[in-house]
Length: 325
Image 1 (cartoon, rainbow, N blue to C red):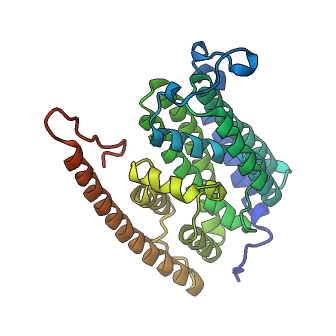
Image 2: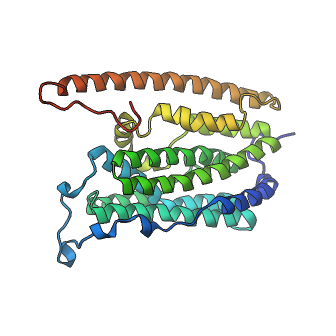
């Protein structure tokens, strides 16, 4: 009989799948160097070394691009906490341990490259950034004691969400170099998503009811890993209004594609508990669709009001954001 909680032998049962997908990942991953994506010629000393400290006018990024960049970077900064979470959950031995190490090493490039870019180009206030980094990393990240099944389900969605956020942030900066950097980071995130997504597919084959329950819990209770940073709610609203990452993208570009890949609503191997979880998941996805539509309508009305105020003789109209909304 399939257990309702995370089976103790889950990690052992999935180890061959982990090894297979680790090898697939290593074949697909392309080596890249963070320093290649930083315009070092733009750099100059700060006052401590006889130069000039940051002033807001030095940044070429508009406020929403700055907000998105800082939010994404601070999220990447908590890598030590993320490593602890998955190393504790998956272990340090065998194929699981090899994946944990490789994933951590690849993720470490992201924060390095983004911070170097922002400091060298003076895209944001480096002192304020350091203050936020210290506070965010000191608080750390706590997954809330997720089971192994819940963890691999969560990161399947989270990696894709991060990919979408980075990709749209790159476009929002209107800087070809930053856009290229964040596209490179997004490729890493997508490969990580595929790894975890394939593990969940295998978990469905081994433990369909328990996996469906885990997926339903993670979808309905999903939070980005940066949710604990100061001002995250306010920043998320601004990012959503700008079309960088909003409810529609979360539902249609993150949740729905992954659920389709797992054939969640076509499976015929579920018992009563799995069916109840699937029904709750379907209801949630419908409600999220309605929430996303309302948000889009409200944003469109706000856009039209802003355009009406701005348009006029000799005045430049408001432009839409990266999402085309």
